[in-house]
Image (cartoon, rainbow, N blue to C red; front, side):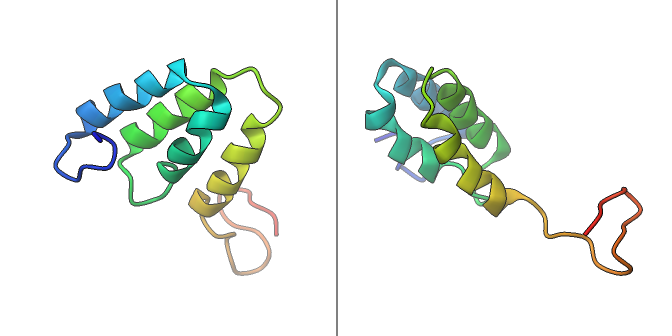
Length: 88
């Protein structure tokens, strides 16, 4: 209930996320994946990542990678190279 309640503070949500570590990956991967979106506070996203990476399962990257792709910035444009060294 704390995760879904908009009035919950980020700290309350972090604590609720940490409790999900006591479940199985199958039980918690959906709720945790739903927290890995750009509109969630970074502390909530990091708490979800922390819990997910605590599971010893080959399924963890399958939960994290789609979220990482969605959160990653778009490739730099212009000339194929950006000042940060990105290569297109």
